[in-house]
Structures are given as structure tokens and as C-alpha cells.
Image (cartoon, rainbow, N blue to C red):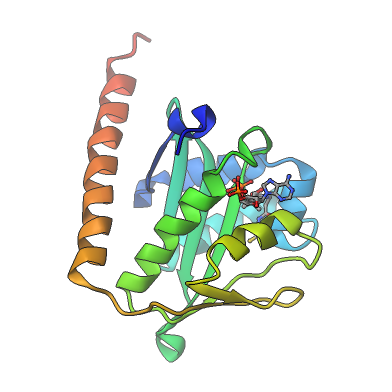
Length: 191
Ligand SMILES: CC(C)(COP(=O)(O)OP(=O)(O)OC[C@H]1O[C@@H](n2cnc3c(N)ncnc32)[C@H](O)[C@@H]1OP(=O)(O)O)[C@@H](O)C(=O)NCCC(=O)NCCS
């Protein structure tokens, strides 16, 4: 990937204590993006409650960080024990970072995490007029089939392999090191 906007950023999983970063990112979305993300107009309070639920549900959230600020996110929410092989996925990119490949990179990481957890069905609540999301989905047509207007993506290559698990571990290792540097630089910053 050679887009400077993307190259300037880092993708890594969010930690459990980072719910506030996710909430602030969702609150920063412009109105149109917020509507697309949640399928309609939602209030700030709704977003705060939504994020608390996400982090209480064992969800995996990959974040796209620029200069330590979360500018994009992809959420993978398992549907629970009754639907152990199903999950819901949702993406959000702040306006200035849209159409620069961030959504593609985040969906790629989310699909890898889904695959390694044996998830076969990914639901994506997406408005029928969301062209960009549909184009993005088309790029992953080999791995997903989407049914827009209502929902849905199906993960075809669902079986984890040692290589797919290693890919996720390596990605997390890189992310972890970068996250540690982030924390250190925040601690060292003069007050
Ligand atoms: C939808 C969204 C996640 C896509 O992420 P993104 O980073 O903007 O998308 P990408 O840059 O990875 O582009 C993916 C594909 O969409 C298409 N695309 C990009 N910009 C587009 C535009 N302005 N109009 C139409 N299609 C577009 C391209 O085919 C692109 O693939 P390519 O770059 O290989 O040609 C992001 O725009 C977003 O967060 N929107 C608001 C919230 C939302 O709609 N969430 C989805 C609900 S689950």
C-alpha cells in the first residue's frame, strides 16, 4: 500500500482500557458517516452506551491510528454462544481518511481475525445506498458474499491455518510494539 495517508498510520487491536478512544472516534464522525455507520441518526449518548456494550462483549476492534489518534476502526462482535460461528462486523473511518484504502486494510485484518476464530458468517448492517461500502465488499468477493439492503457477508475461507494464525500473531506483535512506544511517548511528554 503506497497511499501516504495510510502509510502514516498504524493498525492494531484496541485494548480493553481503550474504550474511550473508540467512543471519541465514533463521536468525531461527520453526520453522514455516523448515519451510515449506525444505519440512521443516533445521539451521542447512544454511542457512549454502544461502546460500553462492545467492550463488554468480547468484541475485537482493530484501530487505525495516526499520531496516536484513532481515525478508523473495524469491529468484530461475536453473536454469542447460540450463534458461535457468526459475528457482526462494522467499519468507521473519519472523513479525511476515507477513500485512501484504510477501510480495505481494516476489513482485511478483521476477516483474518474472523477466520482464525472459526467464524463462517459475518453480518454487516449496511444501507443500500452505501456505494463505498459495497465497492469495498466487492474487493473481498472471494472471501465474502454480501447481500446489501438488509445485511450480510459470508466468510468462505473460514478454516484457520497455521499461516493465518501466524499472520495475526505477527500483526499483533508489530502492533503491540508500536502501542508500547505510543504509551511511552505519552508518559515522557512534558506536562
Ligand atoms: C465505508 C468505509 C468503511 C469505506 O472505507 P474507506 O477507507 O473509505 O474505503 P477504501 O479507501 O478502502 O475504498 C474501498 C473501495 O471503495 C471504492 N471507493 C473508494 N472511494 C469511493 C468513493 N468516493 N465512491 C465510491 N466508491 C469508492 C473503491 O473501489 C475502493 O477500492 P480501491 O481503492 O481498491 O479502488 C468508510 O468510507 C466509512 O467509514 N464510511 C462511513 C461509515 C460507513 O459507511 N460504514 C459502513 C457501515 S458497516
